[in-house]
Length: 313
Image (cartoon, rainbow, N blue to C red; front, top):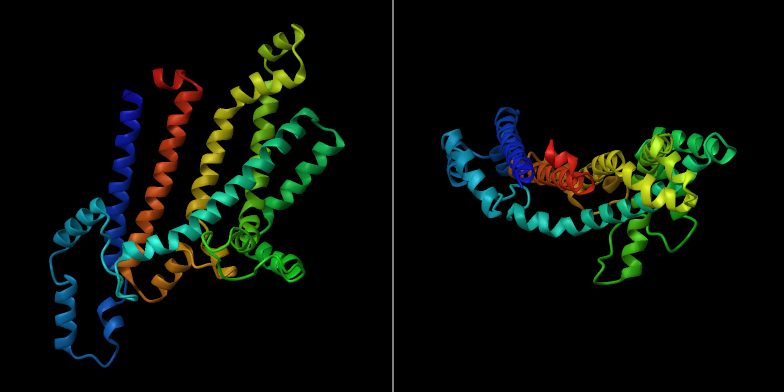
């Protein structure tokens, strides 16, 4: 219990520090959101009236306090560009980004884990060397270039795949998959390469330990050795890397959403930055922060489930 309490305190401290940095950074950035809203023709009276209406004429500590209170209640302020609550904008775009993230992580897990185990069992053989070479290439491929290649050579050749836009799941499951598969592959392929190498390395390290030799000497089949003992003990480093991949996928779909014109949080962030919509940018940054910190918290809890010694330490 104390382990979970300590991790939760760390989670809340991280969120608080990031909120302070985020709020402070946007106060010193050049550009005036009020002038952006009113345009260059606005006079001083209009500017002051709007600044007062938005609460931008109050002391910074009061603005920050109100913003934090809003975060705790889910009220993230109003978007300057869209003239609507930031919360509503995020809730409208989150299904796209989360669907893309879940599909991507599913592909990464289903492909990298079996391939890593297979390569580890066939160490230094042709199949192992071939997979290691392919994953090395996969790690080096830029996501925007990979996305464009998939559009040209897959999306343009097969009518099932949609190369832009998004079809909601409620409208058509097949339609949603057709819009998400190529973006998911674009994100997943480099991550598969990363996770494959960590899975292979973690399993090879376990297979060289004395307990594996002891289990084999008792006549246990290789399948049982792998799935009942080696994989379980290798899950800590694998889970660490997969947690980092989860955080990166959930928070880092900006480029891919632009390439495939997906109306997700990443595209919304680009629009907000372009229009100096500071309340919206702050809201999206905090969403990314909370997502990453919560994922790390869940991974920490899973550590203690897989290895009780972590709780004792």
